[in-house]
Figure 1 (cartoon, helix red, strand yellow):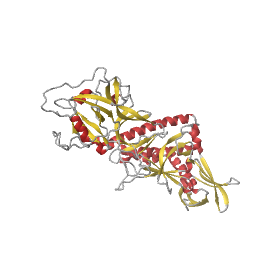
Figure 2 (cartoon, helix red, strand yellow):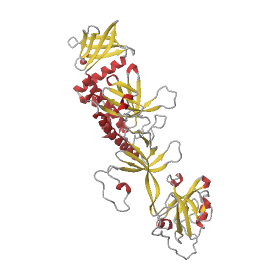
Figure 3 (cartoon, one colour):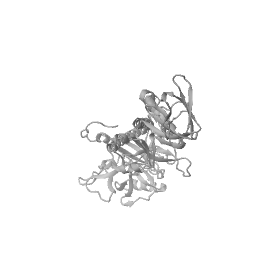
Figure 4 (cartoon, helix red, strand yellow):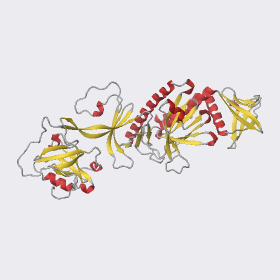
Length: 538
């Protein structure tokens, strides 16, 4: 949960640590997977307004001097009721260490304040047990006498077997059956000598002895400015279910973060995405401060581009798109300095590209409203949210994002940036030909369509936007435009040929859409995915 307002006052001991975080900080638990590595580990996430921090548990010395690096030697006095007060799992026969898996409240191990679940047992009364079997360690601990010195080291990445259910496969009170298993708890919390009448008091650390605590420590910080979120499995277009990773602009990445429930994953995905969006807006403001009013950034962010016809196994590649002034910029890396803007991989004139939304459909042919807001059900669609940018000469570039809100933002921003460019430029002129004559075809926001002689500049014909009743093309260079005369209602056909017909048709579409929007802004809004997304969230 996010906190707002001034930082809370100091809390009494025992208050959950997430309530002690400064304002605008969010914390929560997750499971961290590193692709290609071993078992996942438990981590805590700390999200601030600029950074996502990965924290792992460790045992730290909070008072006194710590000897032997992270190793701790703790002396236990076996109690007649409760024994050593702990259970262990693991063993060399499974190539895992013997680890403390349970500490019983109020008994010997707990009263020392120096032992923790997740501690690997290294020595028992000076005998090294790092390569001992489970049964050997259990036997040594049960027969070590009333005073047992245990040397331990806390494992920051707890073994997966610690998450197995508690309990031994053998009878609870049978200490000599030899049935203990390294994957189950072997209890050392029962009295090993029931006939003993002595009641030694539990050992207490001396006043100057080291004191230890288990704490969450920062292990990785991922700056979120210009960062990106990925729910896509490497090399595929498939989304992960309930998991994602965050990748910083400098290459630092969190690894795949998985959550206990779809709701938690959705909440964290929204929170991190919102933080990145806020930082992107700040970056846009900084860029726009040094730009003229006609060269402002309208929107920018990370997308994934689908690669077509490549021999590589990779099917998607990350790209950074920006709608700035009259152009759509495509970058391989995010522009973090002013000089980076002249190093774009490709630029396209906004009036000559067409944004096309790829709809998602359910089995019953219904619109996938649920996925717009990431709330279960519908949290993890099988396909990402995609859109195409149709450019000159019939080319198409397909991009995808992970959130319905991102897709809605791109649709809204393309529309806004294109309309601004149309209103700024007011007209676009293209060279064309018909029956051997070189002509100029002009699309004008105020006048409509004009065709003139390229040499004399004499106007050959002119029609308003409202007079255009249809069009058809041969898919190559030739187009037929159908205009209706307002008085006679007759249709007049004009045929033209263009070097890049696609760019001209996209320009006509852009001017027509801008004209409609200037007359009836609500009409374009009613057609948008952004409006459908907002309706779904309500």
